[in-house]
Image (cartoon, rainbow, N blue to C red; front, side, top):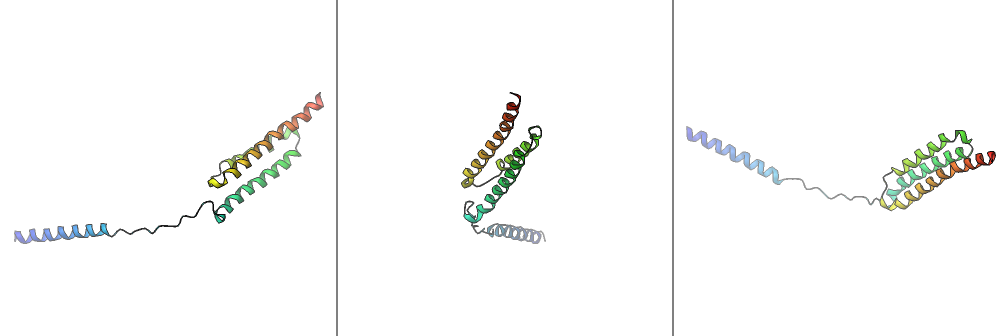
Length: 127
């Protein structure tokens, strides 16, 4: 009787071990996925579109800033800086680094030139 129980336990243990080991051998092999090239024409159109959208918004705010009195110019300048920061924080593929840096440089120059242009007018009036 004792041998029968021992034999059954051994068979159960061997069966469990066999099933466990066979399950490990049957891992699904992942098929390699084609990772799209981030700089392909199809993939950069969306990123370039985002930069164009921000440039359009920036130019609209700049247009308003050019028509704004100096005393009220702080608001448009803050809006220009906000759009500039949005472009700066964009995560773009490396092939668009030049476009991004050129856009930021353009925005920096516009922001810098907006304030002194109005200050020169004020200084001329009081001179």
